[in-house]
Every structure is written in structure tokens, then in C-alpha cells.
Image 1 (cartoon, helix red, strand yellow):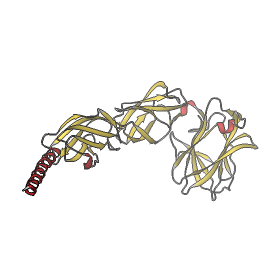
Image 2 (cartoon, rainbow, N blue to C red):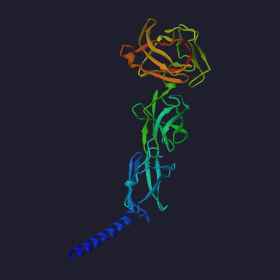
Image 3 (cartoon, rainbow, N blue to C red):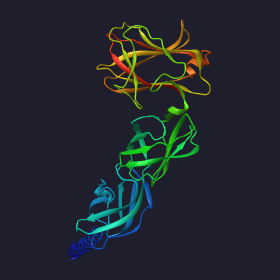
Image 4 (cartoon, helix red, strand yellow):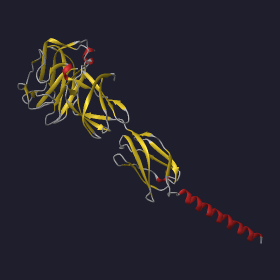
Length: 349
């Protein structure tokens, strides 16, 4: 009798446990009336979102309404009281709604501001004059509201660029006139404001060695190869470039641009130019000369095939050797056989 009562007791306990488990299971799978009671107002792309409420179980999809971007999530981290997921790196910046759908087809929404600063990874051109159109390539550019010019320390200089067109990955701007030789861009979108790491050279406010023509007192004193001439065949901007024909040249033959009155460094920081690649990659060296017989600190570089390459060297390389001015600039061929290339926008900036 005592043994029987123990069995009955165990059955009752087990039955109660089954009822309690079923009750908990039903409660844990609540999906009938999903309600979000709390969640963040804003979060960065890649950040974690935790939404709390009731009947939030069995989530099947999470979509960021702007751009219709899906968010991945782990169902194990979803229960009736909370949903945890990461904001996609591809989410569009600015105000949006997170649209959540559960297994019953019910949708519920949470408003959120996705913080995605504008990103610029490349530009079509880093030289400009007033009115030049430049394409910025990157991300989160679709809702940029202002592109302001700032100096190299990030301080505003009072000009803004016109936004000509924009999408998520590209934006075309028209540059204004400015008095600074070099500027950066301060870009504001709905998330934040950032300053570009790259800078832009105002060709009108630098020492021009060659743009569409040779600068004041600049002369072509090249040696080797065929005559190097101004041409309209290729250009980075403006109308012309220098066609450099090294096809009959030997290694060490060079383009040399001379100013016998010297080219002062002043407060400028860099010497820069654009060079067009030939049909194969080519090696060159670049140097500044104190005199016709004294070249200082040659710098070697490679130009990829079939593209314009921007080359820039800090004038500190030559300042460190005691130079405050240059008699000439020299671009020497280091590959054989020589090829035809083009030079444009040779400046001190």
C-alpha cells in the first residue's frame, strides 16, 4: 500500500510537471500579439540591437525598410520577451523602420536611426579649379546634405561644393573657388559629419610647372628619346598634357623641366603630377636638381599599365638635404624598352 501511494505521488508530480512545461512552452512561443516595449533610438551599422517586449517569439525575418536590407539573426537568441540581432554593414544610414515578421505572418515595427557616416574610398580626380566636377566613390553618400571645404587642419574656410548627383556609393560634386592650395572635404549626412583623409589640390593656387602649358619661365630641357611635345591626345583635366616619347630612349634618359630663376618651395608641402601608364607597367625615378649637374634624392616608382597614376612626394625629402628651391624637375626612364607616356598637372602644392 505504501509502495502504491509512492507511485501515485510520482504520477501526480510528473503530470504536474507536464502541465507546467506545456504552459511554459506555450508562453515561451508567444506570437499572437507582438509588442515592442523598448529598443534603441539609434545604432551604428554593425552594432547590436536588443528589442524587448512581449509575444516576440518565432521571428522569421528582420528587414531594414530603407533599401530593403535584411538582417541576419540567430533564432536561439530570440524568445517571447526579446530579440537580439546585428545591424547589417550594408544598412542605409538615417531614419528607417525595422520590420519584423513572425511565423504567424504578423509584422511589427520599430523606428531607428542607423548611424552610417559617409565614407570616401576613391575619387575621380584630386586636382580642381572652380567649377570642376569630381566623383566621390565610397558608401552612405545617398543622404549627404552638405560638402564643405576645410583646411588641412579641418577648419572651415567658408566655401561649400555643390552636390550635382548622389547615390549610396557615388556622389558628384562641383568645386567652388577657394584661396587655399590644398583642402579637405567635410561631409555631412543624416548620421554624422566626417572629414576626408585625402586632400584636393587647387591648381589655381599652386606653383604651376605644367598644366595646359608650361608655367612662367619653365622650359623643357629633356634629353634622350624623341622630342617631348604638348598634345591634346590625353589629359587629366583642362585641354593638354605633355606627350613623352621614350620609344627611342635608353634607361636614364629623362624629361627635365627647368626654371633658371629657381623654383622656390615657400610654404608649399609637396611636388605632384599625373602620369599615364603605357601598355605595360613601367619604372621611373623622379628628382629635383639644385643645378644642371646636381640631382638630389631620386625617388623611384612604378606606373601601372593603361591608367593615370597620381604621384606625389613631400618637399621635406629635399628640405632635409638643405634645399629651399629647385633648379629643375627630372623624370627618368628606368625600364627598357621605352614607351610613350603622358604627364599632366605638374605642380608644387
